[in-house]
Image (cartoon, rainbow, N blue to C red; front, side, top):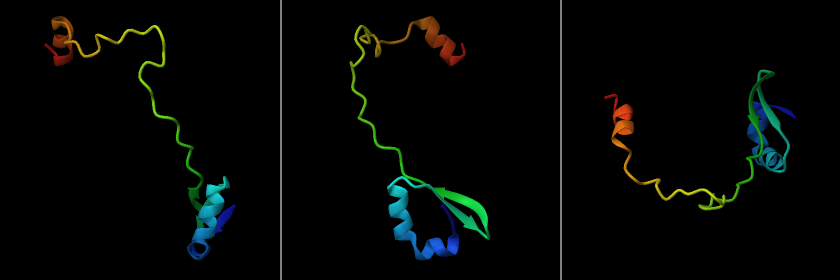
Length: 75
């Protein structure tokens, strides 16, 4: 749906509800497409540690070996 900015100002609440319902709305200025209103992607569940079995991450916080640390520091 293409809506001119002036009309969008007067119908903002209605357009917002339509976008939330899944309709994509193109905002136009002087007839030229300018911006897009569309629904946000649904929130996904938060990541949980340990969901993948068989990965050992126990060494994640261990200090880096000296040669790797030197490479990161440019030595």
